[in-house]
Amino acid sequence: MDEQQSLPPHVLIFPLPLQGPVNSMVKLAQLLCFSGMHITLLLTENIHNRLVRHTNISSRFDQFAGFQIKTISDGLPEDHPREGSKFLELFDSLKLKTKPLFKYMLTSGLLCSDDGKRRPVDCIIADGVLGFTCDVADEIGLPIFCVRTISPCCLWIFFCLPKLIESGEYPFKDDDLDEPIRSVPGAENFLRRRDLPGFCRSGNLTDSNIQLYKTEGQENSRAYGLILNTFEELDGPTLNQMRTICPNIYPIGPLHANLKNKLYEEKTSLGPSSNSLWAEDRSCINWLNNQPFKSVIYVSFGSIATMTNEQLMEFWYGLVNSGQRFLWVIRPDSMAGDDRKNKIPADIAEGTKERGYIVGWAPQEEVLAHPAVGGFWTHCGWNSILESVYEGKPMICWPYFMDQQVNSRFVEEVWGLGLDMKDTCDREIVEKMVKDLMVVRKEEFLERANHMSKLAKNCLIEGGSSYSNFERLVKDIKSFK
Ligand code: UDX
Image (cartoon, rainbow, N blue to C red; front, side):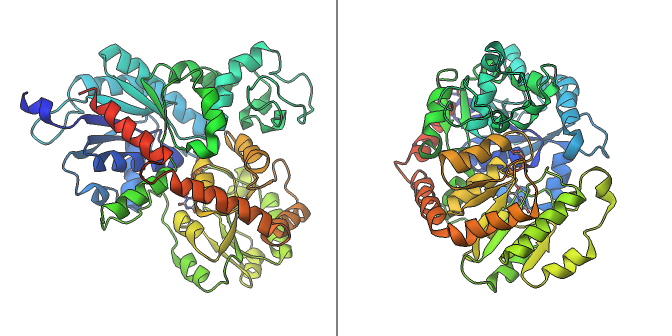
């Protein structure tokens, strides 16, 4: 055996350049490093610059000799607001400008290891939305695994989009959003039009999202396997449906906790680190330290969702009128459209002091793990849901877009872990839901949340479902050497 062959596999990891996917895939990179793989993490220049500004990304990989970061252009000007309303332009640019660059970097040796051995890539792990990575892998004969960081319940709907269109259920024939949906196997008893991915509301077959996602089943089944951030005990029925299209699925989540366990096991000092693209305001932890057990509702709508000034006021009145304590993340770019130029109204800042605390960005995993937090009002981004499930925190769901409309239905109807507030934004409803979650139905929700939290913890220990799936993934990657 020559020296190159005796080395561990060299795996290229290419996340979709958005907070949620980057967060998950950096964690996957760390986990694979612990399994002895040599990893090249390919980040867009924009994401790399922001990660370097706000995190200790490199130091987290210091101990791994075979780790390196490489950067690639996303083709957009530096001042383009990649999150928020213009985020679809990022997808177009990646397909048009980044694809040829990606192929060039792979074939010209620019992605070989910098360790003096100039090792080429043995295998690619890319976000499944970056369909062009499957084209390039095919063209140059490299094995590829896809990762989808959104929820499996939404991904399954993407897989079913062709069927929804064929059956005539989509586009909708009228405005009744409460009509049940019949062409998503396994979800016939609870899925309504309003629970389909947000972009389905456009009712337009030429909508760029419909065009992008209706080929997901086809695209993801081209890869050797599909890696998902979930666990069998949470998503078993949906995963079984998906296996009819992608037979080789690796549910290895919750990823954030999978990594935390590994760091603990290895007694490493790297800590459960954050991959935040914003600066974290840790003062909220001190504030939480002074609040009673499970008394605070944590409010955060992730990294992309925006709201109008009117919605902000309804939320705030609802929260204050509920009489509950709250910790609220309002990102500097949280306000939508013309409201973006407005500052948070002074009466909000002043009136919050009594029972609330506002930050621009929180150390979310730590916040959700905090004993003072008793519930989470979330936009239902998939990372946020998994983080909440793991910590046993019941949820109020205010979905904004994409998978969030589906996720919120699953939270209430399938998992019984909270309340779905979709399509409403009214102070009285907010007040009632916060009281229901934190007081009136507290015990009922906590019981189910604690049960799911136990299952999430067990699946990650030796012999558990995600633990075993991760071992199988490592074994399969090694077989490509
Ligand atoms: C997006 C989509 O919105 C989501 O639906 C999809 O599933 C993944 O991509 P995002 O909106 O950012 O992600 O939501 P989410 O998936 O919840 O990810 C947000 C991440 O930022 C979480 O890991 C959360 O811990 C972190 N976060 C959020 C913070 O660290 N601090 C905060 O203040 C808010």
